[in-house]
Image: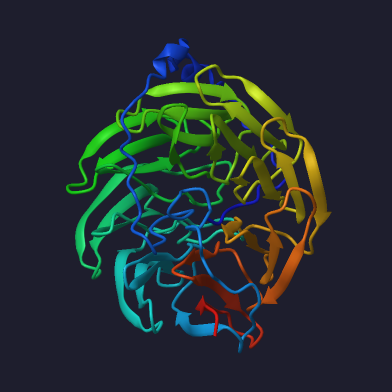
Length: 438
């Protein structure tokens, strides 16, 4: 999910969050055991933001390269029209991206053949109505495509609203709905969140600082009809909602607006919220056991571990900031790369720092874990591969493709799908790479 970096020169929007806190249940018994309705990904696919497990980890047993260059371990490379920061969505024999032609103000979905990289179709979803300005690190096509295996769903901002569109796998529009207003005034940095698949619904978030505030809305995948809606605080943030089965039930998590919040993804009812993180976050929350983890952002920095059983206990926190990128958690440890390129490992149970090391460059990409290795690239296209090892930082390889990287890698079917751009010829061109062992 690519996203924004708020300038430290800006002033904090100072609106209260008491209305949200007041709506949340106070009794821990509210978190009763509930049936699981989380949609499962088909084996070998990467069908939505952060992959099949919704936490940046690939299916176990992935045999993917750790070293490559423009001529080594490249299965195919294909040009991508337009500009965007969405990660590749891989479903069946196809790869999907969102993209935008900025001069023509066209937002589109593009499909490629998974085996050859050939472009199969390009569907224009909207034309016109682009915001006059967005942050230089954002695009008009930042949200990642979500698929239930039968349809694909995208969320774009145009005409000062959030527009959700459902397409067939062949790119034909089924329905299109405008689900809410999005018109930030103080921080005109654009829109970033990716849609979330849950049960029979697709869930979309939009946090901004207007008087009416932002929202989270669930709409029916078949019809586009609204199922539920929850009003958010009047503050700006950029994080995508995510759902996990934590503390005995399905919970929808989102950070930002000075909160870490949990909702019932079926009804939209608030379960609990904790004053934590900061006003603006962009990374997506992760979890392990009954703990959830979030980091951000602006105007302050912090990483938090919170018990998700309704007790609202902040188990630990520190002052490190992963603003644009998400965290990884695996086997009792949290791995992070900050905006400034410092890699960390913390013990998930108590936040003890296991190690830290400095990488080169600035980072906006969220890390991906596959076969015991963590893959993360800096903004200039250097992909670092290091071991999932809490004892020490263990660099495996550095790889370079292009000179711009803001889309997180998708790893499935023993291959890495990577979107990068290259401007070294004097003209910017995005490419989609399929990386696999020769």
